[in-house]
Image: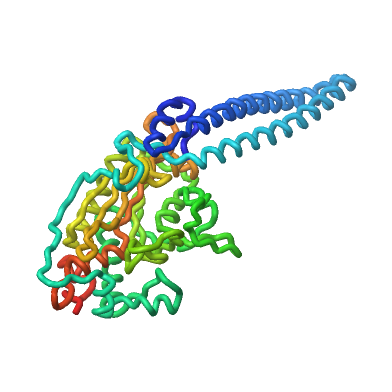
Length: 423
């Protein structure tokens, strides 16, 4: 949620930067400022009433002691009126606060100045590319056919047990899945991240804190009986471990990592983009999460991007990095770098990771703060990155490392899976 102080101080900048997303928020911003003026006036009036009530209450005892019973009774009557007035003001104050927050919840994060304008993914900027796209002298297969051929994923069995979008990994496919998780976690630990095993369900406060709730698009699985939600990513429980904390600046950055299954309804997804491992309702991912001070967060984002680059290079996969345009930017992100791996058989790029700086958007909701060198309380910046999402990593390994006799396992992964080839 955007800080209202930022809107007060830089209204024009906020409106202009939101236009990069293709959003004209000028009327909402004006409404927020109008309500904010009323809120501050109401707060001042409420504080004055409470202060006067406290002062009169202290005087009542003295008046009785002085034998001024009539004046004391008049003072008691006055405190009763002030108490009633303060209760009315408190209700009006709370209503204004709720109205302001409702408007703020509907406004996405303000894009960083480096975010390019654009409406769709076609307007994203390619800023880095590495690795050679393999050229095969045989009929290369897509990963869904390779998975069936080598009996590493059973699509039909997943449909039987649950439904479409829930594949079952088996044999060398299961070992590959487990090996990748351990590889990614070990690499994160080497990079200074603390490993957590979080819950895979969250409460409403956690969903609100990281911006998944209100869930306007209905992408989260909701357990209505218990008012809990299946996590769409371990970013949500990880960041919420810090909710409400006041941390020491010297303890920043706080770096957390976790493996978890991720659950997404993917409502409205259809066509070739959902075939095979391209888009699933349940998938495994190792997530990186960070809380930083405001001055260092973009240096930390660069380090996170470099970490993911290192993983893809060790997996010997051709990849590229995009800076997302405003129209393709997620609601909570101030800036996002997407990693894409080339799908040789599908002849297209597939998103495999996103690294984002959310700045204060989540911390403002969660009241995650620190004190700077001057003793001023500030909101932390939070960052997140996939390192990595497994389905498209597996698709990339199957398709890019295939030959006529099987699939070669990247050298860095062999100690984790216990075999050099799928065959």
